[in-house]
Image 1 (spheres, one colour):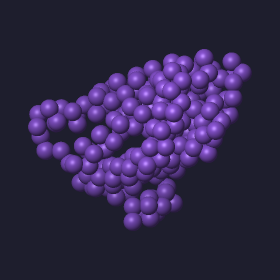
Image 2 (image 1 turned 45 degrees about the vertical axis):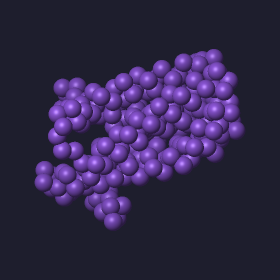
Image 3 (image 1 turned 30 degrees about the vertical axis):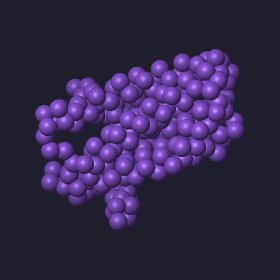
Image 4 (image 1 turned 45 degrees about the horizontal axis):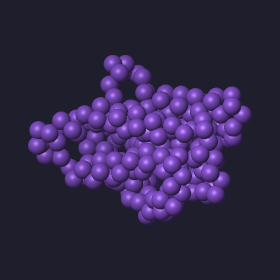
Length: 224
């Protein structure tokens, strides 16, 4: 592993530590033994396992446990579809739950971010797998995909600012920071550059495209 990235697992640990804050309502209900939809339990478990994999994998590389790293990597091929499936279930669950709080148009518009984040997560994971033999590029695409995945966690934290889209700014700033870091140390920054461009487009889309007729009709098709 590159010396500059030998502690990358700390980044994933910090994000994992923020999960209880972002999902405090879920954990409060859990501790109070209130009724919770089963999909929330499943999603929490699956995402928790995925986060642990993100933490463990760079540690294995750092300790030169290559066989264990490759084995877990292959197992992730089987686990990845489950991650995507539970995210899809959460998106549908959120849409159904918000029917009583939002108009149909508003409800369809609010799907833009979770669907876009899921798309970017899948896209960059696939790019990482296509570059599995190029470890430096592979690692960077995994980092970009994880940023898409952790955005919603940050977005659920109340910063006390009504118009502040914390998840969008978190994702943008993370990728810009990684891009500047790699550029400064003359590393292969291209995965971060691609990430910055696509995440920036998502950010712009959430402002200018999510309320359009085209998106709402597209969202209806996706939900079918």
